[in-house]
Image (cartoon, rainbow, N blue to C red; front, side, top):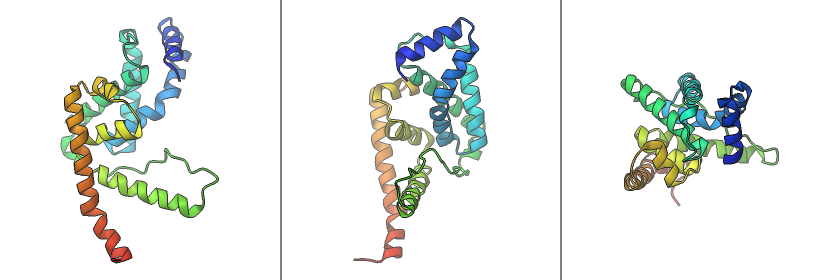
Length: 194
């Protein structure tokens, strides 16, 4: 969806057309839910945060000035809602595991073996990502999986450009260390040394 189309539906919503906002929700619900699930690690809580995000976005829509993309603005609300929920239940989020994500649907042309292999890699990567601190995990997720630019991540997180770059760099290094520590030994045990 383009920024121009977003603005058309935003303007309609501000004039009282609730169906226009329902269209925006439909366009961005997967994006919002994906970030919430990555941060909350629980489907029900991610759904709750997603609903809260759209309620807040609806109530504050008149505050959206178009200085960033609507999706970036929504990301920021989602990110803040997740951080608030995590702060409220800090000890809970250190122990939960993430629910299975079914966002990437398997195309009909892939063989079953290729699908299983991809799913296995996704599970392994999710497991490794979950071992990162929430902020680093969410920044990696936004950059690599949602393909937000550094500028967009800065707007979402309210961090400086230097801080985002440092956190992204640290998160990559930490993720690589986790993969080497947790995945490589398992592969060697499973397949043996060459």
